[in-house]
Image (cartoon, rainbow, N blue to C red; front, side, top):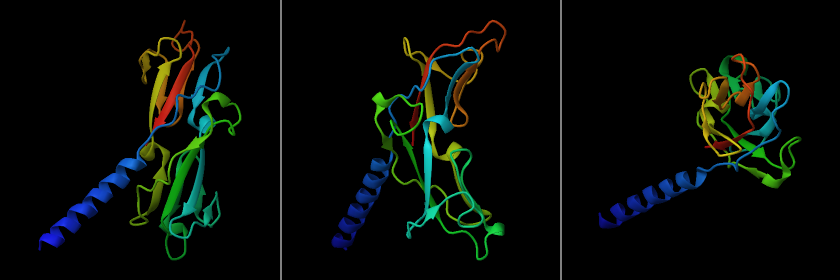
Length: 183
């Protein structure tokens, strides 16, 4: 009995360690400066999504296999109704860095581990960016936090990312922002 309790505790310890190791965050990313239109630190500009079938490592792209999608917005989706025999479990990885056009190369390349929050049950498999990632936004100078609506005219959400449009509201002049993703 004592041996069983020790093995159970060890298994729990390993499970929690793996979970803790899976969490992380990107560096602060800043791809441009505010322009005449505004400031756009969008998720689709900063991150690339790679998808695969869990267990087989078979790649998933938009429409391959038939019925699957893989894009940063909205994420990896498979609807059971669109796939003969139902969906297989999909996992995704987000990457950023110098290999991404327009991303500051000083940040260096990086990526999440393979993420999988859903199993293909019910209506399908839904590995969506809004469910997998969190985002923090801040001003580049002074590092004051930016959230959706604070200051007025700014948005900070996993999708679309961090953004601000000049003169929305009237008179607003956007400042340079940085975004950081966590999982």
